[in-house]
Length: 234
Image (cartoon, rainbow, N blue to C red; front, side, top):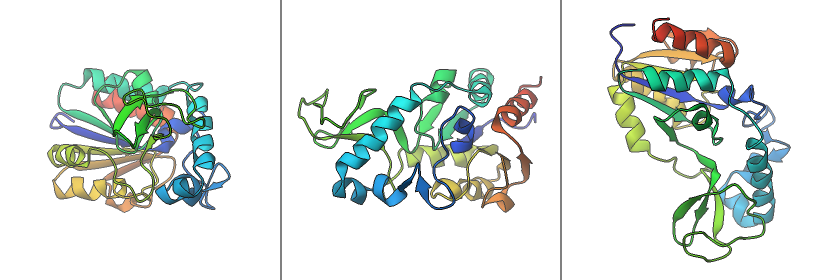
């Protein structure tokens, strides 16, 4: 792998699943017994803000009780030791990559442990509930905080930066993602068009599996450490 300098890694729910964080939705389109439209769209929030805030309050509390797994730790090690450019783009809204030590990281779908004030457009670290409509730490106004999470129909964060990194990458790796949610599902084609090699590490072939030069199936906690070991010449 000596010719590889720049790596972009996309991670999805499969990376956090073995830490006990549910994958995004089941085959019936439900997310923890809720319709995705009810808890993960701006329309759902406008219709029933209490339902949405309670749902995210429960998940925010649950995430703080989970721990990074071997896949998170392996990627943090690669981030620390890889001499070329590297970017981890995660669809996950938990903080397990950070807690494992990853630094070169973009949360394209936002972060559970942030709150976004729609009044003053400030994002603040947030670990407490939002259901009681607390004041924004920045502007002091009550009732404008919402989860800093990208819902369906909203634009993911830092896309220009992500595409710039993909267009420079020699290797694009997708880990634990279904290949069903755009724009992330299109990253592999963008990488191939730029001449990058492409690798998928997943429990089962994703919807975009045919776009990858190589695919390996299995649990992230053993596939990822094994791959990182290869990359670092162990």
